[in-house]
Length: 123
Image (cartoon, rainbow, N blue to C red; front, top):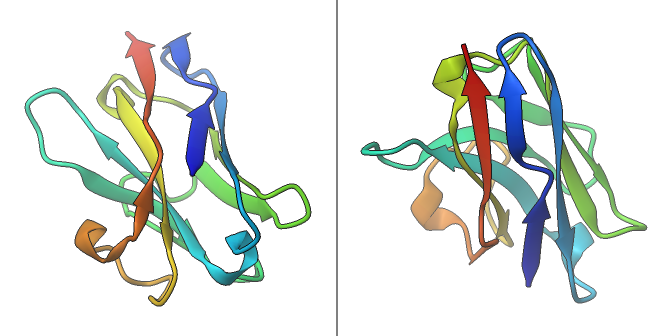
């Protein structure tokens, strides 16, 4: 089970840190990803991190502004979001992939999903 938190309302240029806490003992075996879905749009890949935390991958739209990290001891993955833009407004979802690659951006390959947390960036 995945529980995302940390969303909220922030002005453009501001920062937020999302967290996703996982239950169970298999967290360290999973590639973890963040996706987002804006109103009226399809869910899209944001970032992913490999099992050890040593490799990360980002969508071009967030590269240089967002940082994904994980703490396997705490069963938690984070998404630090800086320099936020109004177009970052979306519901953000964390997801776990047991068998895939950190470079796989296909949401259908992820096995478990959190409930989503809303990020609203005002202009």
